[in-house]
Structure formats: structure tokens, C-alpha cells
Image (cartoon, rainbow, N blue to C red; front, side):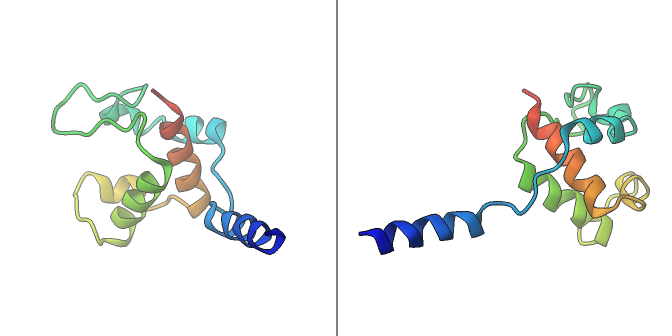
Length: 99
């Protein structure tokens, strides 16, 4: 029984994200995002998605897809071009923290 418990705890550690983003740093970086996605992550335009409350991993994946060109959008490409992985993690953490 102890071996199973240790195994489950070990698997839990490896399946959790290595480092969650910094919400406050993400809030500071998200100022540019607010122009389209709203200051609280709720867009006033139906063409732009709400970011508030989205899952952190989903937001990271989507921002990285825009940055790599996997997802194409002429408005998003220049917005994400200079973001580092840390910036992306922080922005995702910020929007995921919102309701």
C-alpha cells in the first residue's frame, strides 16, 4: 500500500505544471491585451474572445500557437511576437485568475 501511495504522489508531482505564472506580472504585461480583450478580460466586441476565466494551460497553448504561426491572425501575430515564455505564462496566469 505504501508503494502505491508513493507512486501516486510521484505521478502527481510530475503531472502538475512545473511553474505557474505570476499573476501580478501578467497583469502588468496584459495592458496591451486589454485594448481588444477588455481590462478585465471581457471583450466588448464579439469578434474577440473573452480571456477571463480561461484555463491557464489553454491560454499558454493558444498564445504560443499565435507566436509560432501555427494559428494565424494578423492582429495577434505582432502582439505576441516579442513575448517570452515567462511573459506568456504570466499573462495566462493573470487571465486564468479572473472570473
